[in-house]
Length: 350
Image (tube, rainbow, N blue to C red):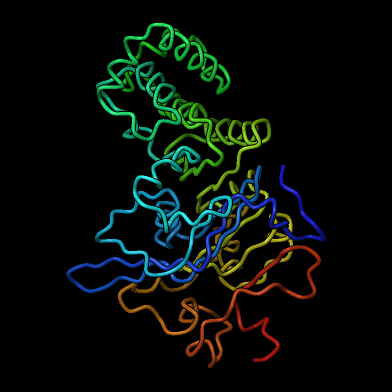
């Protein structure tokens, strides 16, 4: 599991470090500056949440980490993505493919993320056969499928992983096509596929979207238990703060492509600092049945983002300086554990 030294994550224990990442998209209307100087750290065996409204750049950041951004139209204009000290953005495409084995991705849509023309068994077995082989071409694939010993071992691994994700009757499930499974079953299959890849890190993009509450709870428990038992790092993307609170050790709050607050989960909810984070918490419906207050306004136009702090047009505490400068993400001096905020309300020099 991850360790903290005097309330801060130790550098030696850092698996992933994203430094001042900026991403834009070239379109007919101009350049959309979606992600601006975002920085994220994930320790080994740590579950980190990436939260914010839809359209705030969470998935784009994740795709940049995975190396799946469509370039063009996307362009990473600055920043570094360090995996165990290696800058992934400085690698050649061939070298990047070799590092891809360290990642697994759980998409948010289980209905369309599995190939409908192959059985579940074929897709799980293929993950095992392709594991750790970035240049596994068609010829080698055909040869490997004819190696009965390898295929049988892959089937055994697939069955065992399905049992670990609480799927019964593995023999039948392996022979089923995706359309024969429920949404919850498909999501569990996707989690099984992610774990079969033996990754160092899993990026889960809203894995409970579209599922009923009971199934979502089971999936969250499943991911949390696998992280704990396998010592895997996780980036959990969600707009649901309740979900993030349940599964994450630390949370990064993103607004309009920028990180505005980061803290250990317990401190983020007990000592919220940034006005945007406060607005998100106030937007959550109450147990009493009352609706949340919400945040006035909308996410800014990425073609012409606001100067300075991107949240200031919607902020109830905005000051003149907010329109001129972007506040740095800084550690709060009074906090004993990591708690960083990008807001001039907490800058002594303002």
